[in-house]
Image: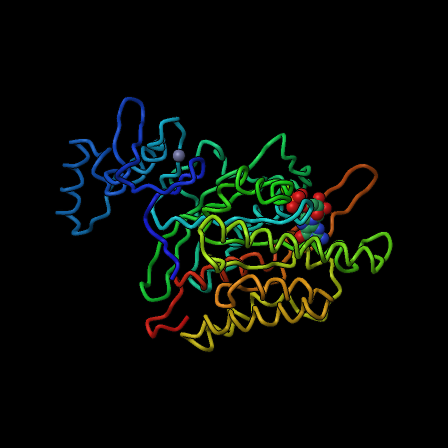
Length: 395
Ligand SMILES: Nc1nc2c(ncn2[C@@H]2O[C@H](COP(=O)(O)OP(=O)(O)O)[C@@H](O)[C@H]2O)c(=O)[nH]1
Ligand SMILES: [Mg+2]
Ligand SMILES: [Zn+2]
């Protein structure tokens, strides 16, 4: 259904290339990505001999110089075959670009770093054999794996709002995503994450011009900001009905705009990729829905009912959708159901920090930020792509 291929997605020229078209350079050495992935380049004669000897003596294929070889691989830069030179991501695995979109202030710049913090550092999906790791090749645009991971989760600082004219799209931040379940038992994906300013999603032409990555994404997370949709904790006053109605209509517009941008780009009648709508900042919402325990219950249920993760995730999405309705977001839910095919649409509630920012004087800081539900949104997307499918064909 969804095509995931071992191709290289070039965000700049909005095209995908085969690895054989991508040339890597390291000093004065060049090699195609196909050759590098096979590992036939970068091995010296001497290390080749040592490897053969090691294999003969130990009977194992592990190589004594593996870490130095990996270090050498990290230095390669990969070039897009387009005329104007620019770098592309050369990591192995099925390219899985995930666009995180939402209006300004929706929590995008917190949600993007919350994904690696929750899934990679805290290992929230480890019990499901889904593991996120550092990539071998980091891209030029995002050399330190960004995006503000230590700033938020270690130093507890609040990053300033992402301004369109200052930074543009940040990323791709790339990670290796190992999925050790499902039909193939072992699958390697190259997850790309992007962070863009909310202004980019205000007009459909701007989406096409400024956010080509959005239209190349194989999955989308749409963050809905509850701050002006429902009364949230820490708010100075209750919202008026009028204010809520304006915000509802703005959010429904965003939902429609994203659907239109994809449909026009792909020239299709139905939205073509998996999408998860996430009611963000769930920590600030008064709801009876136990959103913060959802990841744990999905994991526990999956353990009790092997082979049924797909069904379990659909149930979790239905619960989240009903919670959104209960909170008065029925208009948004209806727009979503009208514009997006149900088999490619999921809902979730999540928080990048599980708390509101605390301010003393002019200092705004996080006290002890911990993401929750962020990995579950990623899991919903993975499930819809089919990579978690069980041998029985269960989705
Ligand atoms: N309560 C709560 N507040 C959040 C959360 N994430 C972000 N915020 C607040 O929302 C503001 C905007 O977040 P930001 O990530 O910059 O939004 P962006 O414009 O979508 O990138 C932040 O400065 C925080 O005050 C969250 O998970 N929970
Ligand atoms: Mg931002
Ligand atoms: Zn390119």
